[in-house]
Image (cartoon, rainbow, N blue to C red; front, side, top):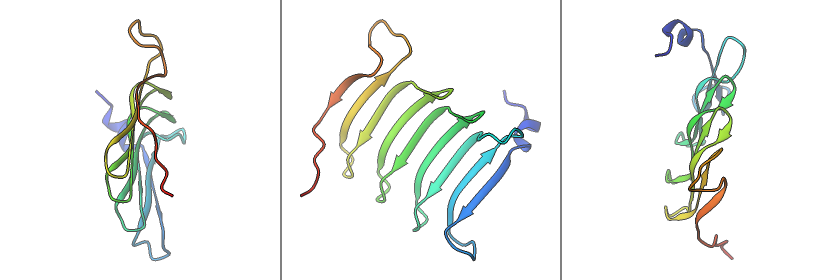
Length: 125
């Protein structure tokens, strides 16, 4: 269980697209050592979520995702203390899986970086 006093000491930093501060660009949280810690969110100019990243002591940690403008997931990936771990998935703008890769430090069943599914990535003409 996390110490509530520690959570209260996180510094929340909000950036905006405009001088009037009506359109949020990003929200980040920093620990007392100035390192990213906790959830960081980014937004498109239209206000919809662009990404969500989670940090622990300045390193990516936990589930991360990036959205297309249409709010479908573009990338979904996992980190453990700054290193990719587990299933990483990229989706097309329509939502179909483009590729999956499974990342592990050591696993007898899968090799680190082994591609599970690979579909051709089509680039519009």
